Image (cartoon, rainbow, N blue to C red; front, side, top):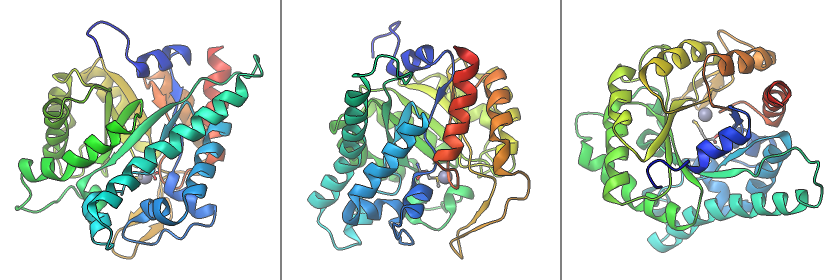
Length: 327
Ligand SMILES: [Zn+2]
């Protein structure tokens, strides 16, 4: 990642005419393909028992027009696999597998497309998902930001360190830190990128439950100030938060940074971490992603996709809207 040269994400965004399309909810789509993911490992359980469904889900998103695939490693962690009775080595192989499944699907899809010069797709990037510590806890704390007084910067770094290395060694194009709920964890991730000497670009996406702050109450101004100082973080944004928060957050982020802005909200339904169910949307309906995508692009988003409860059909809509208007 040389200074001055365009990184892979910026090049993709250029190729896509200023706004690229990310994929949609992976856990959600795996479930609709028949995977049983009501499990402490959530979608990462498919790495053990249904890798073919992960490939199917990635392919469906590519066909729908996704320019970026986010891997199935959101909840794939070494301690998570250890508590499942697996060895550290097997856990690392599964984490690696998440990247390989996405790369293989992208390469096969792209190989087939190249036979048809008028296909209209971009060669997709593979973003290795790095779920937050709260995702590993599987108690909904990615939406509260409350990790308790015992969780320090060092503990968060220890949690993230080895998985980051394993993911990067498997050869993804970028790293996607997802649903980060507080400034401390963003700081841990940023510092690790340097300490581990990661050579691929990253995005850091936060969740938000009030439309103004990170779930912990931390100010985005402070989080982005810190991110602006990191050369390795090339994009910042919001994921898995209701769509009606997104426009004003893009405007806020646009004032705070020159980095690329990534948004992939959920459908607006609300996750109840205690009962492990999605409660109905309080604010929006799925149909409006068409209007949302146009507005988000117009106010400055550079990557738009979907998170939980969004589907290939959501991504098809976003892709149609964005690709229509830029070519
Ligand atoms: Zn989500």
